[in-house]
Length: 226
Length: 291
Image (cartoon, rainbow over the protein chains, first blue to last red):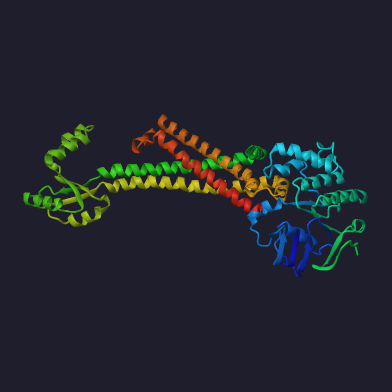
C-alpha cells in the first residue's frame, strides 16, 4: 500500500537531512505508528505521503502510484484517496459539524444529495449522532477531532494519515479517538499515525517504527514506545 | 451545484471587501476609459489623415512675369513626373475666383486685389503626400517658379497635437492600469487570506485547482468587467457633453465620433479589463496559494 524506498529529504538551509535513506513498507490494512522525538522527521513522512514535500532521493509509492514523479496537477485526484487528521483539527469555525464534513464532499464535486445521505452516516460512525448542527466552538476538543476524522473518512479513503491526532487532547479523550481510529482500521483502511504519546502506543500494541535524526532505529510489530 | 457555489463565493468575496472592490473598479474604469478614448482618437486620426491628405495639394506658384515657354515646359515636366498623380493649372482668373470665394466675408480686400496681381499656379496631387520634399527639391530652381507650398505641413502640426493627446491618454491608461493591477493583486491576496482555512481544507481533501482558484479569479474578472462598463459610461458621457456644446467646436475639426464606434470599443475595453484582471489574479494565486 505504502512503500518508501531509500528516501532522503534535506530541507533547504538545513544542516542535516530530515530523513536519511529511509525504507519502509506498509501493507494494506496495517496500523502503523511512527514515533520519535520532535524534529526526528516523522512529520516529513506524512507530508511526503500527501505529496506536499518531495524527497531529494529515493522513491515513494502510495497505492500503486509513484508519488515522487507525480505531476502537481495530479495531486488533487491523488489526495482524494487519502484522509488526513491533524493535531489542530483544521475545522472551519463558521460551519457546523455537518457542514464541515459536507464541505469536503462538495468541493470535490459531490452533490448535496450525496452529502445528505453520507454525512449523517459518518457522523454517526464517529459518535457524533445528534450533534450535527453544533459549531466547532460548541464542541469539546475530542468532539472536534471526531468531526475531523469524519471529514477524513467520509470519502472512504484507502489510507488515513494522522499527524499527532491526540496532541491536543487529554488522555481519556485520546483513548476514545484511538478507539475510533482502530474501528476505521478494521474496515480495511490503512492507518498511519505519527505520535509521541507513549501511553497510546503502549496500549494499542501495533506496529511501531521509531525514527531518530532521520533514520529508522526500530521497526517492530506489536511494539511499545521504547 | 458547483457553478452556484463558485458564483456565490464570487459575490460574497466582492462584498466582503467592498471598499477595495470599489477602488479596484474605479481605477479599472479610469484606465479603460483612457484606453478606449485613446483607441477612438487613434481611429479618428487615421480617418482624418485619409480624408485630409487625400485632398492635400502642393502648390507651385509661378512668378508674375512667367512666360509661355516656361509654363509649357513646367506643365510637360510635371505631367511626366512619376511622383505626381494629378496636375491642375490655375490661371490668374481662376486664382481670382478662388480668392473671392475664400475672402467672401471681406469685400474690401477682394476689391483691393486685381486678378492680375495673383500668381498663376500648378496644383499637384502627389501619389504619396509624404514625398513632398522630392518635388520641392526638383522644382524649386526651375525657371518661372516663385514658391512651392505644401499644405500637408500645416496638417502635420494639427495631427501632431492630436497624436500628442492620444499618447497622453494612452500614458494615463497605462499608469492607471498598473495601479489597477496592483489593486487586483492586493484584493486577491486579502481574499485568499480571509479564506485561507477553506483553501487549506480544499487542498487537503483534493479539490481541483481550478475549483480553488475560480472564485478568486472570477472575482477579479467581475470587477474588471464592472470597470469596463463604467469606462463605457464615461465615454458616452463625454460624447454627450461634446455634442451638447463645450467641445462642439472641436467636433468641427475632428470628424464626429459615432455611437456605434463608441459601442464597438466596449468589447476591447471589456476584454482588456477582464483579461488583465484574470491574469493578475491567477499569477497572484500561484504565488500566494501555491496550488
